[in-house]
Length: 175
Image 1 (cartoon, rainbow, N blue to C red):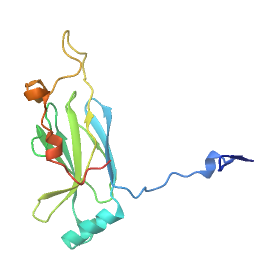
Image 2 (cartoon, one colour):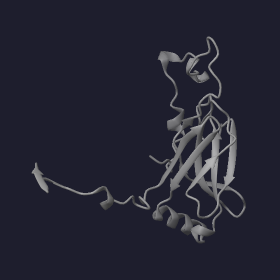
Image 3 (tube, rainbow, N blue to C red):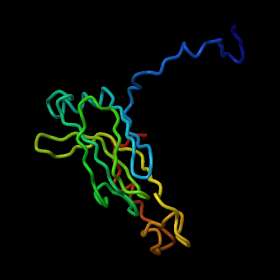
Image 4 (cartoon, rainbow, N blue to C red):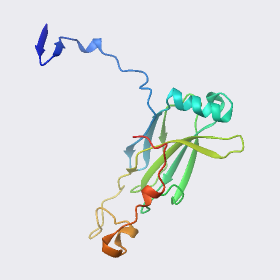
């Protein structure tokens, strides 16, 4: 059955006719909250970024050690260098997702997916979204439900807050 309307042809398809693609060919790193102490990360590195990385290091992309670097950025205007805590997770070569356990409840996290050089220097390729783990206990009486970042409560001329995030723009950030 075919319906026509405004140049759009709608066909009568069954759900079995559709397949989820195995890859979207886009650079992407996403964090999802599983529970108060666990996050799930999934990613895809495009063929172009793999090729550029391989060209830069003059070796096959598959040979480079992959790392998921977690940043605890609770109460911090993160500039890439001022995290409360940094956790490096060595990944298996074929991994495209990972569960991160043992994190703090009621904390804010972001992540970088990258590689180590042969000298163990971390080189980021992708930056994730920012997520907050939930509390693992009820909020105390009178405790604010959403904490205020310390820099936001400091008075600035004409209520101006410096654009820290723009000063440290990372071109590898995923969308």
